[in-house]
Image (cartoon, rainbow over the protein chains, first blue to last red):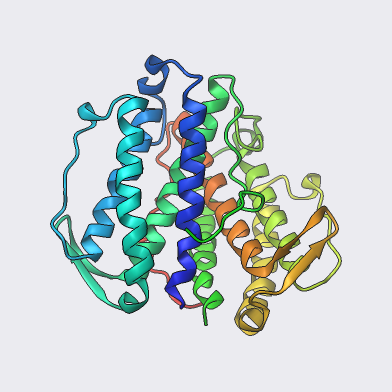
Length: 160
Length: 160
């Protein structure tokens, strides 16, 4: 019941991410992969990083081995969007079915020596994406473009 | 029980905000109030805006009249930090004592014609601050400074 509430933030993040993918359609690929100041470097790499981090932690919660993706394989909108869609479907199914039983469980992952609760990890994934999307909003203005709205209210978040 | 879980995000936001206030100590006031591209304009105005929006929505949930603050009264670190501290103490007490009874309640506020659930509003406040802090992280690099870590993991979030 408690952890389930966090799903709304995943839905929010996924909706905002898709609106940013739509936003990207008006921008040349060179601009999307251009190295920028701050954040993780480029607009497209930001999406790749968000997707990669979300999936890694979710697999960690599932006690599955980490899957490593290479940005070279996803360095265009046409390539990174299907990755986002595919992993999201898998994650959504998992979150819907297994979340409540996991509350309070302690998790070890291959890339970190510390142990974390599932609860902490879910908070981490959520804040991670919102933070990076905030960076995109500044870069958007650098390009002279209006950023996607980040407002939770009005985003029409329903259960997935 | 459910809504209570969201408190961890408030604690996270408040901790990150305080770390940014510490970060500000190394930056000249002119840089803090300098108009920047994207976001709400300047570093200090971002804090003011985050604090103002959080407090307005929380008062909305409490069915209290909105309080309007003027940035001219809080346009230095020395002025905005005490405002943050003061309102946070009030908000923390409220969230600790009243949150669970509010779940699902529908709220009207003076600045918006729509009605929202308390749940939606709390999600909105949380995402709002994380988003704007993401913008600060880009501006921080423009100043040649390392931004505050946004990682939820390792931030040591305990119950308030």
